[in-house]
Image (cartoon, rainbow, N blue to C red; front, side, top):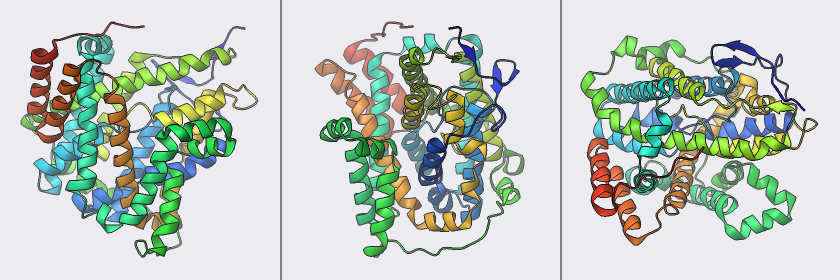
Length: 445
């Protein structure tokens, strides 16, 4: 069989596939997307309100823009991955921005600078093909230290920096949500049970949703959550948001700030490159099961998509790092159904578009859903950061093989989590060279 790439409108290296024209609606992915996207896509809203000076409605408008840009990765640019945040970079970014800049306007400028730096890195490394060479140049110990730094920063954000604002406000509901999600996602005994019972396997496929729903049910019983459901449709205040955050209104970041943010953008690139490798490996395992569809894996396209989306985000709603390449859990779920055959899913692109609500993020406009989720958004943020911390530690600690490497990884991680990006990165480089040597991994195709 000669596989054919799914139809769409080609423009340069990109392929746009219009929902309902080029891609079909698949209800299993669509229904999961409604709940999972609602539970996680708005997790940053309470932070934008409490730390960046936005109203609730303005923060929802910003989240809507982020969602549209994320969705464009698959729908507009033709990426074969389920896109998401650069989640491991989030705690490092929050530590840098919230600790280093006091006023909301300065924090927006920092987010702009990070987005612009990252966009430029992706554009240059993508268009020149140097991205892979750069990753081979970095030793595994330094990469592991970067990932462990994200883990430390995430857990510090939840349990120390913002504990009074989020965790201690809703301790029981947050704990219940975290325990359920950690057990379902990472527990070794639970993995064995999932293999035996389909219901548990389905539960595990829902990601953050089971823990989030448990918190939503328990919160009112223990007095930590109070619902005030309102009806109607939200008219997102995009003009107000533009006036608050756009560089055309509040000014562009200075060259000094761009330079200050550069090492953190490099750290984020290291993480996002790893996401691309993961996404390709998941696809490579599944492609033999679908000889009827050609999946176009194009690193240059992926880099340019990241560059364009982050550049646009810097203009309309700068909040780094919400424009990444992969939401691993969702990618695995969609690919697993796609590999079951055309009867289960006609095209990989249809499955991805369905999970992302066919590029129509209507959940951000429904007031009953928004007001119902509002008292739970702090829980969603804590849950996201705790799971990110656990997952990053899980990955980082598996990389070093020798005692000196393990100690170096911890040192690098602490430096990145506690110091400014430049100092953290310089400490990481120096520790790697002096303690274990600059051991580069082998290039793998």
